[in-house]
Length: 123
Image 1: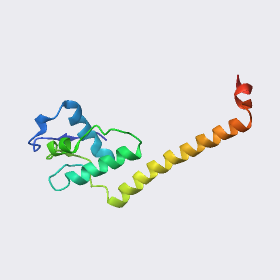
Image 2 (image 1 turned 60 degrees about the vertical axis):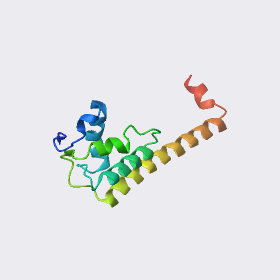
Image 3 (image 1 turned 90 degrees about the horizontal axis):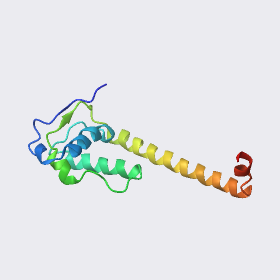
Image 4 (image 1 turned 30 degrees about the vertical axis):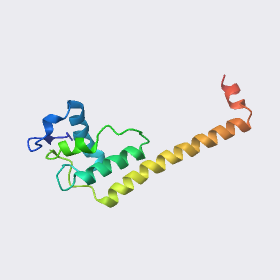
């Protein structure tokens, strides 16, 4: 399915660089909200930041000012993802990352306990 978008109602759209515009458009997918409005732009940005934090990224590309400049953008990401579904998605990201960290710690412990024998056997 293609991602369709329309920024004709975004009065400050021209204030954004093309890369910021693209980020607003494509971020509607993980954010789970297909339009940016005066009423929901703070929620949209909050979800964007949660998604960023859950993925372990340090510096979010978009600012709240960018999102305000995108008010009026609409996409075919609908219906709006419920808060419960969004929280479950974010929790799933965090859980998978934690499991990967634990698995790596266990692998390193096993390797240390074997005195590096695993590495020597494959070398």
